[in-house]
Structure formats: structure tokens, C-alpha cells
Length: 202
Image 1 (cartoon, rainbow, N blue to C red):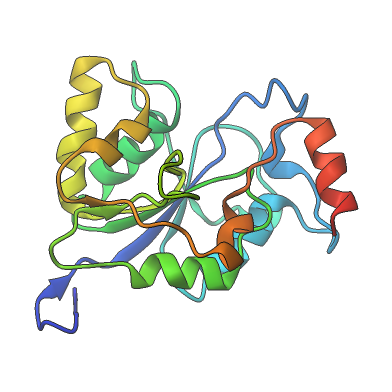
Image 2 (tube, rainbow, N blue to C red):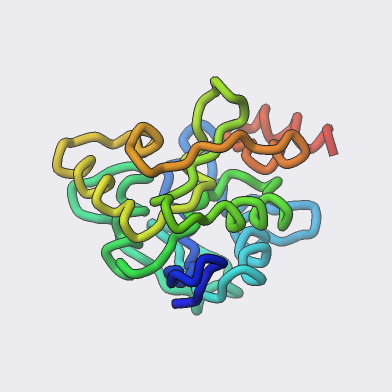
């Protein structure tokens, strides 16, 4: 563990990238869609994460590019569906880590957005689940979870709650508003139409 500004130990930072979704609306695996640079979304996201942590895992089944074959793959937690299985798998595997949790369908993530999220770490916080607007929805799939947040996710699992956004309602979870200049990083793309429109905006 490393120290923070208050001299208290911080959990080591790791990243978990979710690639196990069915991508039914897109019609093909979203993590394998190629960006303008010719690399897949999953490759681009891993590349963005590496300056922040070398400890990156992929959660979920499916093929991955050969360039990522050496990354650790975490199997789904039995009996659990959706993103909850990914964060639970990660936190059970390395319970002493602070986890950056990312969806595979956010191709506009930037280093600045990741830096802002990582800088949100606070000794009194169990995690950061950002929101686009003050009264808007929270964004749990580009978020940060400290080791103690595992208690919440284990409770969800026991209660059959699959919506991990519910974690934002728990004590000690920060829900800061994302700076306007960074909001685009939290935009996910689910359909071919959304993909086409995102390409036109670039």
C-alpha cells in the first residue's frame, strides 16, 4: 500500500474491465469494435489504464485480441448476472485492492477523466460513483471502489439486487458531479445507430 496526503495507507489501485455483456443491441461484441486507430475498444481502454496501474484484469467471457492474451481473465461469479458479477469477482480475487471498474462500451474515455476519478480517492470514502448532473443518474461503470465497498456488493448479492448503481445510495460512497469538460468519457455506446452518430461527431 502507498500513503496518501494524510499519512494513512491507500489500497493499491487495480482496474477491472467488463467485457462479458451480450451486446445484443449492438449485434456484435462491443469490446472488439475497432476505433479510428485500428485497435479495438478493449485494447484502447487497456492502453489508457496502463499509466495509472499495471494491474488490469478482464472480467467475462469472449475473445480478446492477441495483444491482451497475457491479461488475467476473471470468471463470472456463479449465480450472479450483469456488472455485479464482475466487481464481485474482482473484489473476491484481490480484496485488498481499490478497483477502477470500467465498461467496455465507453470508447471516449480520456486520461484526464481517469486522472479526475483517481484523484477523488479519500481516506473517509469507500468509493466514487460519479454523476453527470447534480440531480442526474450515477455512473457506476466508470467508477472507483475501495476495499470496504465489497461489503455493499456482497449484501446486494445475498439480497438478489443486480443493479450496482444502488451502491451510490450507501453511506461513505461519494457521488461528485463530473466536470463538463470530462462528461464525454462517461458516454456509452450500445447500438449501431449510436456508433454511427458518435463517428460523425468526431
